[in-house]
Image (cartoon, rainbow, N blue to C red):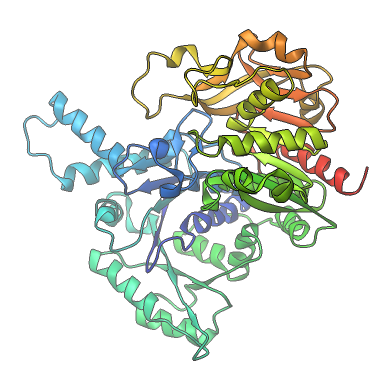
Length: 533
């Protein structure tokens, strides 16, 4: 039978439950266990796909085309797993399923209630995802005490009665702040958080205490006593230089040994040698480069979480620290390209939606093209690259995307044909993994080392094929196409040191132990420019 680890959090949000869950998965997988993850999000949206990034951060896209919580990106980056839509459920998705059953008459006219119908649906999702695994790690979004989280908390409270108490472990992440004025670590927030959890009927087995320093033994003993957990079950979740150090800290604190003992798991010893070696490369690089990331959501860096981590991975391949200069695209419009971009070793334009900041992105790409600065465009970044070349090299005045200007005389980017009849916005884009054939000898081919790849997509608009020949005559190279040749997936620029843009999102599939080839190639090009090679 599968074992279940439930991860909850208290006091404040953004303590790092996703990273903690991913790190636990990393440790258990390193011991030879077969694991999986489930993120339960309390918001009523069916998925985060229509939410503003400032509300929720990045939308992570799985291989099967689900728009999910950004924590699924952490889970994939810290383990060998490739997750699906079944690894993320929201309150909206749970209620939608129950209401659909009620409309069909599945409940035989009975009154449909939170308990047992909603909680039963939640528990069924938990059991389904855990099939054929040793351990399922289930993260509850939000914080203890949030009214919207209560159905999920009630469902996991019931789980020991369904699967046996010996098969369930509750891990609670909480805050132990250091008050510099008094020079003290304060345990009261943790005590109150645990008390709130116990009021719901859940006694945590292990406490992860988020803090900026290692907790002394006497303080751990105090927390254990007041929170009713065994001695040794209070673990320091210390602030670290890089997120990839978290499993190493947890290992040092004995977290994996504690989990294995409490769940009576039979495992081999952990093997973190390769992981630790990569962490050391991040912490002690031989080189540094500066990459200008020009986007519209840079006020919340979580909006580009996978992208930021993919740049870290690409740098590790060259023993290089990638310093990201976060630039609002509207800032380029206000101050000009020279003022904002002159110190960049490489320039990256990420994905996004809407007209705000588009002209700043186009100015940025013109600067990179004319100055020979390595350029990497993703999704909207590719579309803006096409618009820029059309306007400033091919002489197509007022060229644009029909997303931003329906009356443009040159819609070099237009709505995908199958999108024209779609009115619902949620879950209807081109989503998930699709194949792409590469041009022999292109930058993309040299980076990947193969002629066909699969990458994850999230878009409605595409390159307008009516402009292929016109733009190719001015240096645009269509280096990646769909297998039927109809969709442009990658563009490059003839005569430029390194200029590449993709319609897909390669950042979703980059891993610390397997950096994405395009991010590695981009980091290498930026390093060569900095070193004058």
